[in-house]
Amino acid sequence: MNNGKVAVVTGAGSGIGKAAATALVRNGWNVVFTGRRLETLEAAIADIGAADGKALAIACDVSKPDQVDALFDGAASAFGRVDLLFNNAGMGFKSTLIDEIPVDVWTDMVAANLTGSFLCARAAFRHMRAQSPQGGRIINNGSISAHAPRPGSVPYTTTKHAITGLTKTLALDGRPFSIACGQIDIGNALTEMAAPMTKGVPQASGAMAVEAVMDVRHVADAVVHMAGLPLDANILFMTVMATNMPFVGRG
Image (cartoon, rainbow, N blue to C red; front, side, top):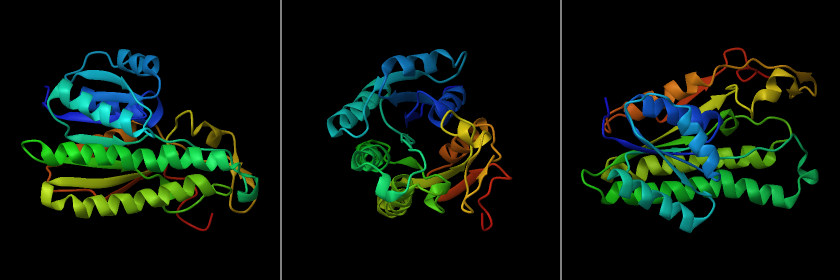
């Protein structure tokens, strides 16, 4: 059954974003799939099959303010309002020591992972604050790297620690407007980005090791659960991880 609620999912063409956006549509949400490549988004929507919600593809580079504003205006125009933002778009880079990381890699990663999340949260907040009935929910993809770094991950880990600050401040500033904000920290969901975990990745000890992974659908289910709460309840932080990955402990 279509619940009439409207979600915007960034980075929805593949991986965690695609899984979460698809799960929302199948649970009755009207979902705007967004990412840089329209054809990838349309292919993701074609894979959904029968569902109670509606899906719409809108191409957007989340690091561009004008494109982000047009995205959220388009979502509201198509579906009437914005109830949920899943701030998921981002990029990574191979394990590299800081003095060997090109400055343009840092700049690109900050633009995608941090500035993009800020711009999308800003546009979503604007709509949620102005619409009637007022309010909505923002879920930020923080990652396990919001808590602990992998070796050689300065740009990625820095941006993900910053996302935690964004989450906490939005959770505070959204209170008067019924805007809830939470963060999902994901560890080793098996997507294209996490595929190297199955072959071996650098560990804190200096060794290379294969790491446990989990099905990405468990992340999607968690996002649907967070999204479905009433606005007077909020999961501020949720960690969803492969049980046996090297996170809890000394690595």
